[in-house]
Image 1 (cartoon, protein in one colour):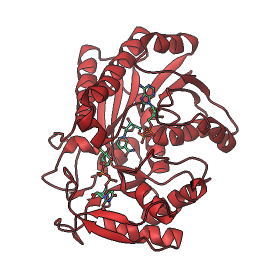
Image 2 (image 1 turned 30 degrees about the vertical axis):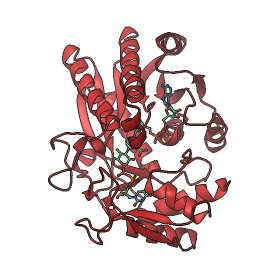
Image 3 (image 1 turned 180 degrees about the vertical axis):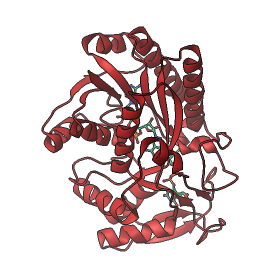
Length: 333
Ligand code: NAD
Ligand code: UFG
């Protein structure tokens, strides 16, 4: 029996595939390579000595999905495939709803046809909107401020309805905080296209000399130093959280929503400092106006992940920055 990983050559997916293989799961990857590279398969093979089966396929193509389910004995699905750029989703909402909602519906439909009812879904802390209190617990009110976030919230609602209609489903909705870092080998990591939106990939490009300085989006928030605070989590910790989640899902029915974060918040300037230590270079910065839609502070209450899954993040901000830099310095263009 195999685990199907949609989006398995992407940033989080590739790290999860490595950990699944280490745990002796058989893995089948589906990805249309829209935001990842086929060479990731070689890297996974170098790290694990196993080359997972790969289908270049699109979740919008139901027939392609049926082919994968009929050619493999799929036991469960980890569903990462989707678009994730917040700004782009505001400009191209139809594209985002089509890929992230229609594509996911196709997957759920085909899973149902093949009687595969165990699913781990990639959601995001973005579904909490601007939280009234911190740390954020899973039962906090949900709201979104952009189409990307809404696609995640719609998926959550759709999955709850699917479970109500058929109690044989086992669904884990994982709400990620801010994944950063890379595999210790430096072989897989995050390779954003164009100008990075996210903080750490941007800092990494300042360190490699590709960008001149970090633009800090506002220093007048009500936080430790006025800059935005987030719960950064090492991507390998996140991958390990998926292993626990799939193991749980394979032995329980129901729908569970679980935060995956460290529970610690770091400001933009604190992350910059940790990255400077990791790369041994100065990261110049300029304070700019706030970025529209940004909230002051966001970090997880991680009690449920520990109580339900026995999972806790192990890596701190220094290791996240060291491993992120170890990967980024190898991809200087
Ligand atoms: P990523 O872009 O690196 O990986 C997503 C993968 O899905 C890519 O390899 C892409 O080629 C593939 N894909 C996209 N649309 C597809 C389609 N229609 N059919 C087949 N493959 C398709 O992104 P990531 O950072 O690894 O994120 C994985 C998931 O986690 C996404 O659903 C994302 O929304 C969610 N998430 C990410 C973050 C983050 O900060 N990285 C935070 C919260 C949630
Ligand atoms: N920031 C800068 N300069 C930059 C980039 C970011 O100052 O060049 C700041 C932001 O203002 C924010 C912090 O760094 O305070 C983190 O910003 P990111 O863009 O890295 O991350 P966000 O928290 O804004 O959003 C990320 C993902 C979303 C996801 C959310 C969930 O991009 O998709 O985490 O927590 F929904």
